[in-house]
Length: 361
Image 1 (tube, rainbow, N blue to C red):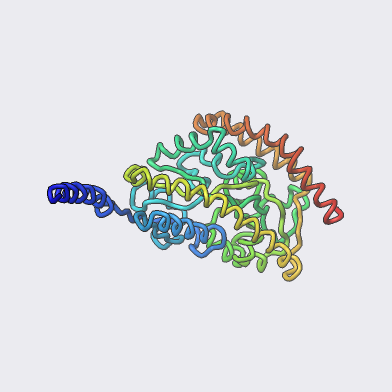
Image 2 (cartoon, helix red, strand yellow):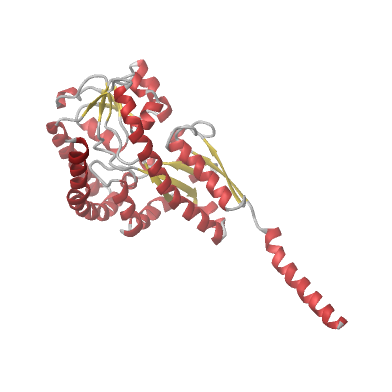
């Protein structure tokens, strides 16, 4: 009996030791997250901080991510460089901020008359987009993850109405991504100020017009105080993406369970972030008009027609002159044509019918 107890105790002790050791020896990882926007900015900054908190909580503190807003560790548009070099571990951002690295990055963010948020995620998850994104960022030692979208953005804030193409010529305008290049080709003087500096640029008169996101963010940034005409929707950002992108060495160091936590937390953030933007944009539009006297406008049909012509010309030019852009564009455009037809018949028609029934329009 004693021998049995001894063997049981020895075996049990060995087993307990074997089971307990990994819990004691588990590695812990502490990451820094940088971003191009203020950490408290609605939608963008808030969801970045929330994602960091979720990963920290889900991993029981084994992977702790500390977020830093624009300029706290690195300048807003240097987040990609910081993560590539390893001076930061990951960044929350949007791919078109880093197109000085590759023009193909535009295709994972916002494209004039391109994917909306839902179609973009469909292409990423099931149409080969993620593999192309991995390939494009992998060349720089970075692993990307989709973590949400603002949904359809606004066309921007203007001090004067846009009634013709002549009204764009010479206009000093803050416009991001490929939309900025389209505006430049139409004669506007385009600048890309960091998000936190847009209000000051408008207030000082350094720019005459500016786009940022949509009603919720734009009102939070006070843009309704410096311009009265609000153009909806954006032609250039029908559903731009947000990303959590990670230094590849930091990513490869993680054990499989922590990789799974990061992967699924990013997927969850994709849903949560889009819901956050959609709900609050809907809620913010009324006060902008009813309380602040903002005047809603749409770009005239002839202006949109020329913007569309220049946009397609630009995309074709990039596809022909940039091999990487062309490689991604082939996949992107093939699904975009199908999505345009489907969305017209389904989403577009549903929106029109709903407005007719509920709004009498």
